[in-house]
Image (cartoon, rainbow over all chains, first blue to last red; front, side, top):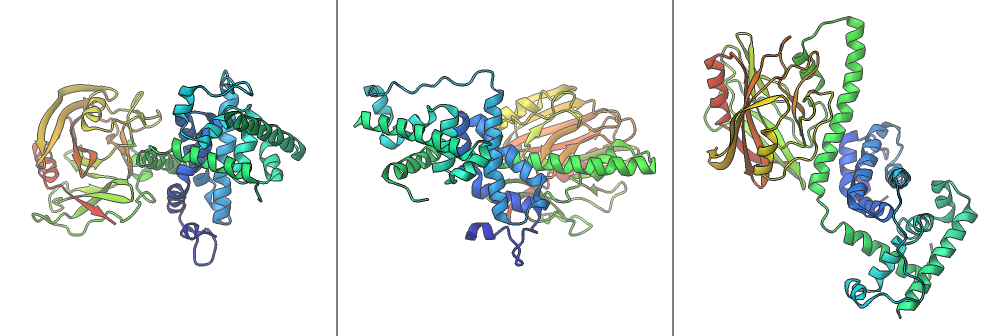
Length: 179
Length: 277
């Protein structure tokens, strides 16, 4: 358990601290990170902030059913992922996939805006097809295993592996085309 | 997970992207929104409890009393609990403190000196209020996280897009639901600071419900008292206190005694602000 999380745990090691104090502490610890996660899934920050607020309110409602603070952090992660995916499903039109054709270099202007390879790579992730993007974000931002991702997204581990393979192949091609 | 060089670059790129997109995130504003959301959940829970109790008892309670009971700040305060510390006022020693803002780990509290020896003495729930000769009045100090919208009644969703400057906040207050503007927003001085003053008359009658002026750190702030709520005159002063845009409010029902109005005016001028732990 991290030192920060230990603040919301009683001396007995359980989570019987007042719900509001616990949620407020977790908000301080995780809000920014979770908004970052949600932005990568839904594209715009306003929607991302709404999703994260709803996640914390959901945590407050079910606080007494949690057994330890790790459950709380996991609940928040999963709630944000589910909320983000739900928002995307309800959008009338999903965003267009803007990934440039493989082999086409970013324009000089785009290169100037994208200060470095990391920035360009992150843009390329955001331009992936939705399911591939979700797999990449869950794998490399949340550090989930393929099995966990499969459970969260409700697909088979084989499907996760396939999406991850296609995504990383596309991204590696993109990186090579810039070098 | 063991990562190869490309995967490490990818993980690093995503972390950098998250950091970049949240660089200018207003966490204080988000924290206020969260507080308002948690208050709403608490209130919904209490309303469900009260609905069951009231149905069982078949009690008839006036709307103001219900509101006072259901919105008492039982679990709202981030730190410290407002309490009366004496029963008679003396200059410079507030006998009631109320949390008004909590942002970036700093709790801002307002202290006020109430004369608790008077007839129709002050009573304290979310905020101090008086009852005298069948009329109600009171004062409040807060940074609103939401303002009345729709009909203004508790059942309507409030406006959470609250102005972040005294000017914007005053403009929003001037347009509260079911209000008549008696004095438009005007620059003035209040408590030794620049402020914007405005005055409204509001019809707060929400049937058996409550007119909520604002959602605040202490929960909902309402002005519905009595079986048939009389129209209420509210004075607002909006000013920056220690960098926080605050609303200082006095209110009284139409027909309130001059004794009550004068005591509210006296009390509000004793306000002092401190940073609490």
